[in-house]
Image (cartoon, rainbow, N blue to C red; front, top):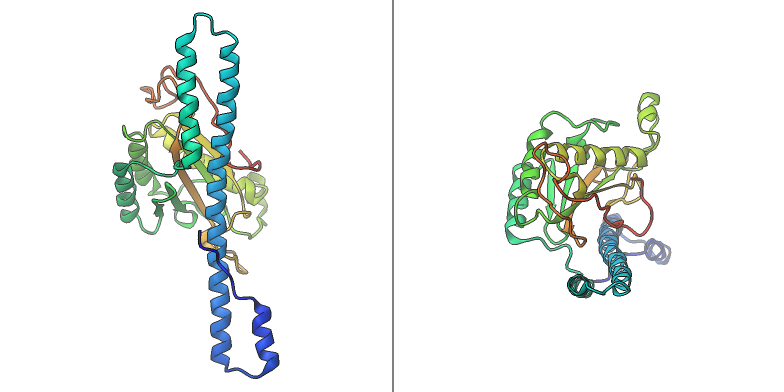
Length: 286
């Protein structure tokens, strides 16, 4: 990763003290500083995602090691189970080494890119991170966790992609974010006391819509960060870019019995409900 070295404002002030510089040059320096600052925010967000992926893998690796020790103590007549667990353990080791959880199959990448291109105001797709971003301003009304009319079509098409054979064994992590403008309206605060609540409730709404459209309920993890993970600097009225819901697709490292949805669109027919490890180091609202 290329280190970003933002221009320090103190350097600009030093220039002003040492001698007069043209106003245009000063403005250019300030603009450059702000641009570097926003790039740094974006890079920090990418780093947090990489750390989250690594943390999830390491947690699941530790669980696999614990399971292995337990089975080793009861391995009489269970050699096949131990061999399978050893194979899963080695697979986890390779994935931790490569940290390639953000890479999606080529067909899925193309399908998600095509979907995002058809709804450019609502969707952005980050192929490198396996992440689809919904712009909250085009998905929800101000201060609301109810989906706007017109979003059912795009969510239905997304559900079809998520249920495609190439990605049916992937888990779906839905994360809500807001800007830093506090909730002041009493009627809104009664439903969403803080931005953290609002971001989590919006993520839950997207998750519920996808489950309604046939995605297995036990494939989801939901989180809400409120205003605490901005991707650009907030202004006096926040920033539209920070009001978003992000969906990450990553391999389900704990295999479930049957990932296919049931006929009623709910949980899989025979799969036990297995809660995936947290996608973050700290504890988001869930």
